[in-house]
Picture 1: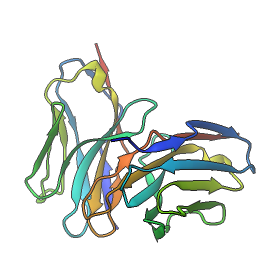
Picture 2: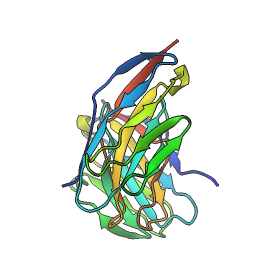
Picture 3: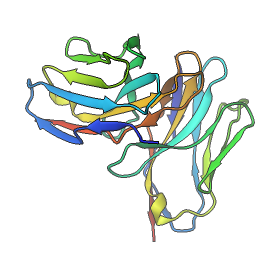
Picture 4: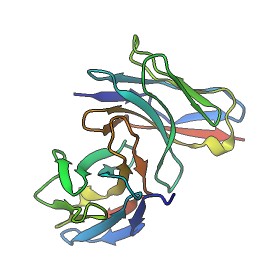
Length: 114
Length: 112
């Protein structure tokens, strides 16, 4: 089974610029997650989708972050405008969405804001 | 709210030493518990899991037992290898909402 695909692997941008990350989950996984992992910390959930609907975006800084999953498969996460503190690894994960099913993670996108 | 606390690292060991990483949690209800491992430059990989009290998860020589009475899920390995050098994350998952809550991670460095 193919894993969770993410692109790009690395991105360097200047503050106030915009950036977008892409994720393709495991085929058939209804639930998709975006996590932010700041260096030296555990991942923090930004947003959770069930099919193409948002289940939880309580930790998403909505003034600058947005995410969509239009057809219930691929997803994009956007930051506009970026701040220095957004430097982190952005991890996408997916799961069947049934109670207790673990997340399968992609390799992540490492964002550096300078 | 739910939370996971792990021992801080880095933990530095010699090859073939015994490894223990402590993990305790706070949660209502009956969460599932997980250990994920993150090798340098890679995403998180599921190492092992336990879904109910007294369950023991095991994989690649690692073990952890779900202790509800002490709200703990400590990770152990009897003889570590250099290839076990990584960051280890303890996490809990509530069936309702299917969301993971992670601890801060523990970096392990195994020296030959």
